[in-house]
Image (cartoon, rainbow, N blue to C red):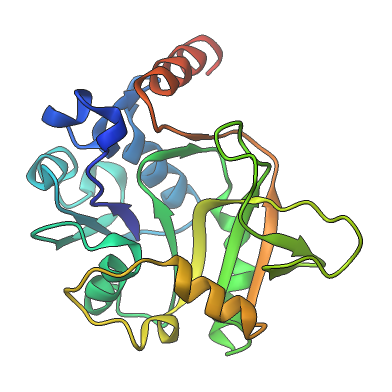
Length: 229
């Protein structure tokens, strides 16, 4: 699933006319970079949720044939936040374990690395697997601690440094059992419940990751990709 329902307030005025996942970097929309990387990793059925200017996303991507995938859309009248959006889309997802990626980031992560945690979650051992990154300048405090492949909210060993959640994760649908479809609900409380229960694994990704949260970061990423890709 690709999350594409956010309003992108910090990206205004660009997002007044264009949904944030369709903003272009390196000659293609942010969301297309995700679709191509997911397809390369063997994921050929993708669910995309949308709200703000969502019809533009459908018009741009269609049913996915141009990318070698099948796309289904979860249409939200107004954005339901992350957990609410996932819970609402579950009937379209149709499997117990699935990866989710934020549509408004750029990341050179190899999604084929998710095969092992997906198999582990399918076996019922965990409810979440999070891809964590080094803390970016705009989020220096981090989110979670990663120790021996497990995600914790507080350090267990001397001096581990918190890392930042990348917006890429694998979830078991059981994580959303108590999240009503069609209602707003954030993801963080559900992740913390899984972490506190010892049911969250994680990994560190050290490659390129950009939260395209401001027009300035969008421009910098675009120039970088056009210069080096």
